[in-house]
Length: 65
Image 1: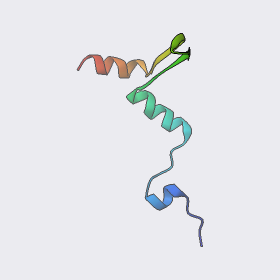
Image 2: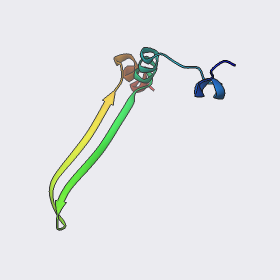
Image 3: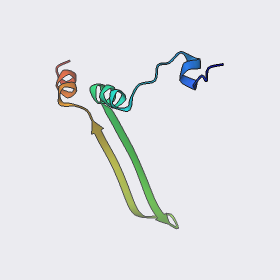
């Protein structure tokens, strides 16, 4: 009996890492997060992160819409 992976059982195709990365960069990815360090209801440190990953062609295509 052949060994079936989870992707094979669900009918999804496995994509190599580079194809997945290419697909994500073609669409664009936004990563956002924040963290606050506080003691006794006094905020001591706020860390905010906003990152946009996309290729230049995707950004130009989006801005022309």
